[in-house]
Image 1 (spheres, rainbow, N blue to C red):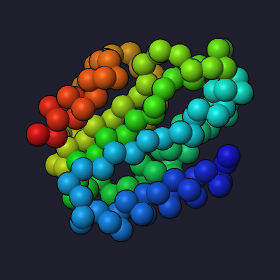
Image 2: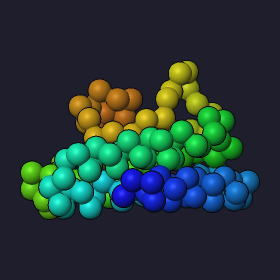
Image 3: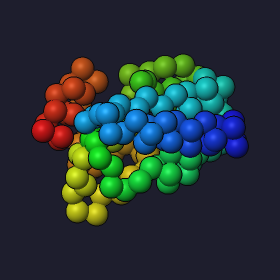
Length: 132
């Protein structure tokens, strides 16, 4: 996955920015950590998450002209090597950042983030609540 995945993420980011003037809101679905989860490869999954930070968030400009939601579609714990009903990371960012918000994505879900935890069926409601 290494360099190829990071290049693909940078390409995704560049594509989003190329068309950014056309949208008020962008939803990004990240699939990278899923495959190593199915393989039971915890190190590969950690690497995939790091590549999301370095290949997507590090490239994405801080002052975006649109609101953004980034999420995975489901949890794939390495222990199970299968999908589960565990929480997934979700980041919702208004078009104007609040305070010192930093864009960082991981699977350390403890409910202490600004969003806390919520059921997936409430994602649209959460997006609407945070971006207006």
